[in-house]
Amino acid sequence: MVFAKLPILSPLPLPEATVEVDRAARKGWVLYQVRPGDTLAGIAARFGVDPRHIQWSSGLKDDRLQVGQELRIPLVAAEEREPRVPPGVEVYRVRPGDTLASLAQRYGLSPLDLVSANPSLESLDRLVAGSVIYIPKGAKGLLVSLPEGETLVDLAGRFGLSPVAVARANGIQDPTELRPGDLVLLPGIRARTTYQRLLAKQEEERQARLEAERRRQEEERRLAEERRRQEALRQARLRQAQAPKPQVRRVSYQEGGLRWPLSGFRITTYFGQRGAFQRFHTGIDLAAPYGTPIAAAKSGQVEVAGWSALGYGFHVILDHGGGVETLYAHLSRIAVRPGEWVEAGQVIGYVGSTGWSTGPHLHFEVRVGGVPQNPLAYLP
Ligand SMILES: [Zn+2]
Image (cartoon, rainbow, N blue to C red):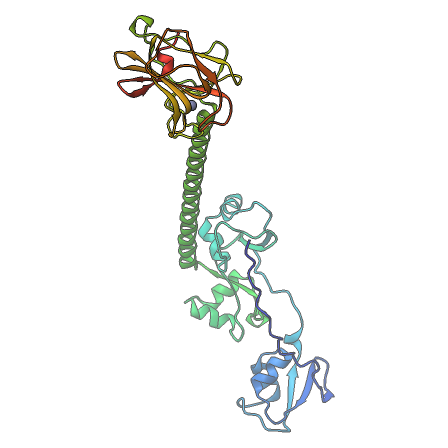
């Protein structure tokens, strides 16, 4: 997880903690003596009032000030006051699960009506629980707050409406009772552009969600594919380790059948399997106790009886004629000599672990035309 580095906040300039009031005037007013560097806007901002109100109450012709001059500052504008909401507009607190569409449906409004009454909405989908949505129950129109320094007449003019019509729609007798921040319904004006923008944004977000979902599914597919691949690999390794008996093509005894060279044994490695010393096992390994007698698998002539530099250790090769040979390896002792004729079942040596071997066993090979064959195909 990555943690975003938080920006270090620089200390905000402290507001002037105290406002020196030279001497009290009438209730609701302060008298202020202009000091060097003062501006009307600065003083107005400091007292939280409209500069024009200071201008009017102090009888100023313009905003030029003289040091030492006395200003009458009306404090009425500074008092905290809830913004006025026009009659017929309900203030609705968003509950979890509310959407603009569900609210529009509940109040029998079009989404455009709702957006027009809430032109500062940021999204059609995400309504913040606890936030305020204005529901126009009477006249529909654009609901805006009266900007600082603007009157209802200015506002109406800006939208090409008659001030009288606007005042009537807002239940106002005296336009001067409105304060900056108060909500004004501009009848018949629709926040089409805002709505279009929000619709476009909604579509954009929908596309983004679809794209994210598509990517997620793709990633899931990729992971599933990877898991399948790993599982197949694991199964393959397992099969290899378990060494299932390879398919054996049976050759009838008449075709050159052999007899088992040992009477008691356990097959530890099959033909073709990866062996301890070979990539491809050219015979079968028959585990048996050290010194177990080894019988000739078929009658024939001893072709080799001796030591092998190729890892067979002490070994015997019998030639059975017709290009068929058998090989017996890792013997502890050899009981025949090269050139000697042996009958099937005759002892030719004893089990050992000479050459490349990890324990007493007989490595038994069948070769036809010099090529190792699967001995099981020739054995009963
Ligand atoms: Zn072997």
